[in-house]
Structure formats: structure tokens, C-alpha cells
Length: 216
Image 1 (cartoon, rainbow, N blue to C red):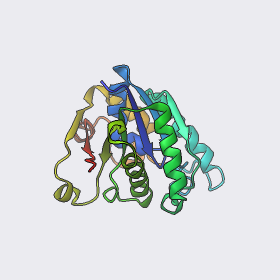
Image 2: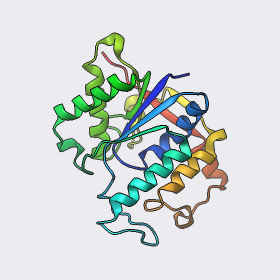
Image 3: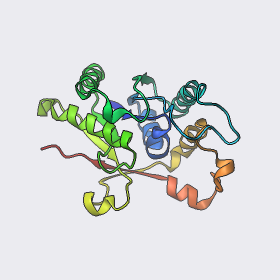
């Protein structure tokens, strides 16, 4: 059992599809989870279907959706880092490293979950993962937490190999689907052409996979 997990993602809803079952499983076992969400995803193109927000009201809506998602998963500690959506790669990197190091020093995680830099499709995803790796690399080796990364770019397995951490989350699908449903502005089962009850959906969502980042 992990003592404390720190999750570092750039957008509300990044926690839902790839990690929510794993987090719910750990939380049920007594693990504390801190989620550092770097932005509010305020530049997202989706506004809901039907429309739930406009460009002005979307940030507050996404904050509320994120809070609801965290409640569904059981996350005890949500940190909103206040960066701007779609600009993580252009932020002052020393500032970002400093803030992440301060958070690591505060919560002392045994495990950090983030994106695998270069293999996570969105520039914010890659920049966030790179910032975490940069921060942990600078720590003394004996103090470094483990880092598990999400990767899903085309062909990533050909380069990274198969994921080395596979988590069966079928018993935590209610929490996972509740987390996904919380982000109504970004995704709705009713308009996605699929259902939570579809056999293929249940099978696809029942396993979450991660790559362990190996530091030199």
C-alpha cells in the first residue's frame, strides 16, 4: 500500500479516464491522495452538449466539475495550481519546478502519477510530465518517490515497451464512471454513442496501465 500518492495533471478530467479507478482502489486501502491540477482547462473547445457554459463561465464550471470528480473518486486533497490552459510549456520552468518541489516536500509522496513526457499527445500533458520528471531528477536519489506515467500516443508501446503496471479496477468502475460523468462539459455518455453498460466499455475501462519512469 502506498503511503501518499501525488497526482500531477494539467487539466480537469485528466484524472478520470486513466487513473480514477486506481486512485479509488488506493484510497479504499487507506492511502492519502493529493491531486495537483495545474490549470482549469479554460481553453477547452467543448462547452457541453447541450451547451452548458461560454468562454467566460467555463473556468468556474470546470472547477466545480473537478471538485465533483474528486468527491466521486474519494480524493482528499485537491490543489489548484492556477496556471493557464495550453501554456504549461511556456511557463517559467524554474518557478514550476520550485512549486512542484515544495509540494513534494510537503506531502512526501511515495508515488507520483503524471504523464509520460513525449508520449501523452497534448503539449500540456507532455510539459507537465516533463516538469515532474525534472523536479524528481533533481532530488537526492534516496528521497525520490516512484513515478508512474500515463502514455497513449500512437506507437508508444513500440518505444516504451509494454506498461509494467497494470491495475484491475473492475470493482471501482462505479467511482470511475462517476468521475467521468462529473465532467459534463467535456463528455456525456448520452451523446458519445456508447453506454457505461456496454460490454466493450466495461472491458476497456476495467484495467488502467502505467509505465514506471526509470531515473538514471
